Amino acid sequence: MWRFLWRAAALCTALGVSAQAAEECGFPRAAEFGSLRLAQVTVARAMFTTAGGAPLPGRPYVVQGDLVIQGPSQGGRRCTLWLPLPGAPTDETRGFLRDTQVRPVPAGPLTGRWTAGRPDLFIEIRPGGQVSGQALRFLPSGSANVGEMQGGLTLRGATWVYRSAGCEVTMRPLGPWLLVADDWLQKPDDRRCGGVGVSFSGWYRREP
Image (cartoon, rainbow, N blue to C red):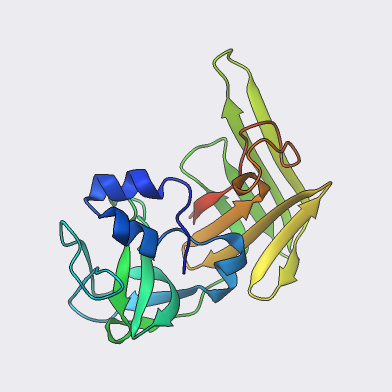
């Protein structure tokens, strides 16, 4: 089961999603990236539900042609994450969809420049698995803690991993998105991927 991480609680509250539904279908950990898939909605409207099929408060839904990220099938349903594309609302939407409402599609290429909505948080991946990236955390004093990546990626199953000087960052490209998790999730005070509070973790969009 996907675990409940990062901003999931705040996002689900904003969307009117119950705490139970959020715990059932949270953002995946790095170890779970390999079990994810990209899928496309094939029905006119697919309503998000709990794992048992109960409607979610607010009755969130996706429409035919939408791309979603999904975990393994559980009783004919999959934990599903819809992430916004440029021009769409900025909130994530999550819940369960039936297997019959979607079809799997290819994950797409890894290369490109990926951004997380801020110019100071980006990852660029070039042919041959060479990666560079930057993450900043601005401090009240006006200074900033900096995290950087520069080097090669190693394929580990369906995921790509960057390792340097004890810093480990896991990536999974899924269509227009790149999911990223680093050591900060388990060790928020660890400086190996940058200064305190610096993290590459989250989801990124591919730049045009």
